[in-house]
Image 1 (cartoon, rainbow, N blue to C red):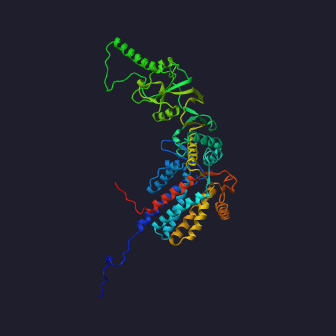
Image 2 (tube, rainbow, N blue to C red):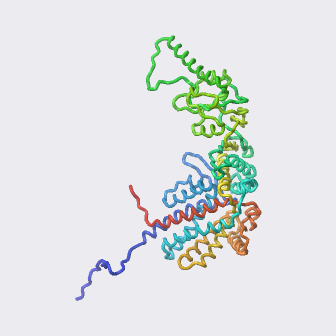
Image 3 (tube, rainbow, N blue to C red):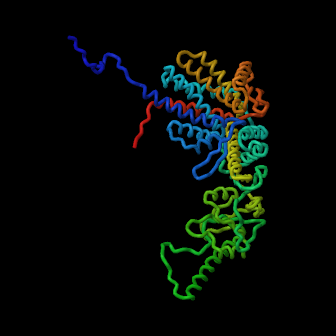
Length: 535
């Protein structure tokens, strides 16, 4: 009688090859890639001048309308770790170049799609990652060969590139006003000694509700979004101003420790009030002795910076008072006025004051602002007053202006321009495809696949503009093959033209950082083969 043996466990011999299950690793990679691609697809419709806007509604009822990739992704609640990497990617692009935040995410999504097809074909992730690294280095060389050098004195070209950045924003109809404004404000803060160091914190943006974006202006001086404190009838306009920025309080002192003072009769009460008056008067006399007639008082958290009594005496002394100046604004104000902040009344001296021709309160719409004009020995700073009919437009105008300022900063740092409208991406795709033919083995196969991924940018641009993407991209390939390096998609005319002649230009830095950051991010996602959760 035959007996059936129970299936025994496979014996693993050290001499023979054993089977190792890699399914979980493949699954983790696949999940990461799909999650990251979902984030890229979410912002893909916002790419380009005809891209759609997103309305972001938060839990507390705040609404933001924007098509800035970095803003959309920052506000999204992304939980998957790999998808969070794409949010960080757009943030990195925002800090490195300021523009191209949507492009970098869409490109990363396309590279991930190609990576997934390569992995499915059985290519090892390390081989894919190494091919990407070589591709990025080659792509930057191709972009640099395409670029056109630029002089910082060429204001017109700087305005064209700032206008290109603004054309894809909600406030694109105001690009003819905002682009020159962005260029002038950046050029006014550039230090001739260190032209490559542009600090955007030297440009202060003040938002004021009312009017339209057309009323936005560049102010050579200081603007405060607050009223003059003239509750006691003080002046609201001062000429030949001597301005002091003070960080101490003009109010009666408090005890150092928490304690109560018992007042038993009226004479003691009168004596306390008299001492208070004498203390405040003594301070104001010292201030007046220096000839100071405008006071900027820092916001205080310990006690009131000024009281009604001190405001009354300051008004009698004909000193204009602007109170509740934020602590983080002090550095900008002192740099602009070329003065020093005064931390104690004993240090109040003439040499610490700033001088200006005029300080006045101006009515704008419903509210009021304070302007300081004609500052003597003004520091390398500037202020921009943005106007808008509602808060949504105001916030979007500020974000758009910030992007335009970043574009001009990129051009000051790295003085090369490149065509826009999908031209560099198609040129990259064509050149990398030709390069892949010269290579051998798996590397050639990977680079050929990735070269096609760059076509996602012109494809999406034409798709968002309502054109036929397949026909446009095919025609674009054909033009570039004939040697028209700067042929790109003209979204306004709905056809392919020489984009440089149409003044659609962008800084080289935006394109190079897009390629380097997106390939870096994709390589990192490819290298992850497991997710370990810890408590």
